[in-house]
Image (tube, rainbow, N blue to C red; front, side, top):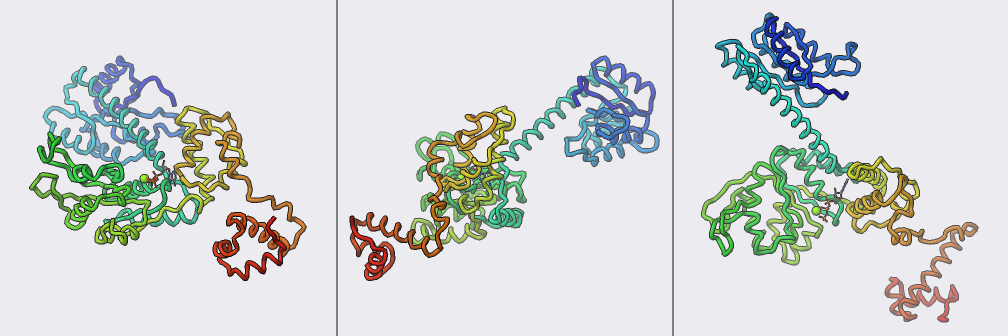
Length: 468
Ligand SMILES: Nc1ncnc2c1ncn2[C@@H]1O[C@H](COP(=O)(O)OP(=O)(O)OP(=O)(O)O)[C@@H](O)[C@H]1O
Ligand SMILES: [Mg+2]
């Protein structure tokens, strides 16, 4: 509902006060409603703003509440307003009014969640300013809420495949624990998103989420990035700097691309994991940090351990709860829901009306290998959404796309053959191709095919294959 004026509900048993407040607020351009008891005021709030409300009561933007009321006290009414959750929207700001000499009650009320208090006798300017500020703050809170939801949408994980459903279940189990998580999986499969989901559902969700890209920071700098440094610790350290572990205190740190971390930095990370302690570079003091550590890598860390480039003890410390982010080509059923999600998101971002995807586009997308996984899919969809008209058609896809996605072969040619004929024909074609590739060298071809030379000779004879 679009309304020009904010509406203020005044709850006070004194008729004069109600009248005065109405005059003051209306002269400021507000709509004013009033109630003489807490009960009537609460009734009004419950009715307000619901579509099926018979009275079509407009929503209330701010409440002025007298603390001293007959029957139900203002304090109790306030408590009820605070627990009245509404539709998940931010609460209506409540300004309490206290009688002469009851300021302590008013202070108590602000502790219970009242926005502010006004003392009797009421001062016109103070009433106006307090209401104006309360409305401004609640508008800002709603805006923050809206942005939060938008950001949450940006980090939404889509996945209907059994692999992703299993992953979601694992995340739900692991997130609210202290267990350390190592996320593996190819580039662009959503490892960072998994780390964020773990944080959002963790015991430290209200704390910071700090991501460190270990591959992007040079070996010399990584220690000072992670652990901070004291002034004068090295040339260029002109001031004390907090490390990211300190910044992440009370939250989660994501050590991204941990496979690329130097062995010295690994030793220091190990110490934090073992003791929760660290010291800044060039510093003596031992600092305690409480940080949930999540690591991610697209390397096979077990192999790195074997090769001696990754500390075994650190690997075991990190790998308490391994999570695997599956490549997109192994879960093609996720493509359609993801494409729908990305199209909607990019249309909204660019201020377009929602575009429609033609089904043959989805078919082409489902046939592709996706070496760059979800990141590649997302990039293509962004480009397509911007370049296409109302309906997204195969022509809107990048050129290479259509070509790479030709079906493997034209199976229609074989529609009247038996399975045996089909297999033999395929085998013949295949042998010809492999012989070509090995310059008709029988030994090398047989080796590549994993069969004996004599066996290959037999096949050539059977299929009547000769070098042209
Ligand atoms: N399941 C998913 N649903 C929606 N978006 C996803 C999903 N998985 C990945 N994405 C998106 O794909 C992009 C790549 O994901 P992310 O950065 O998490 O991958 P990564 O595995 O960390 O890649 P890299 O190894 O290259 O760092 C991001 O924009 C992310 O939002
Ligand atoms: Mg990443």
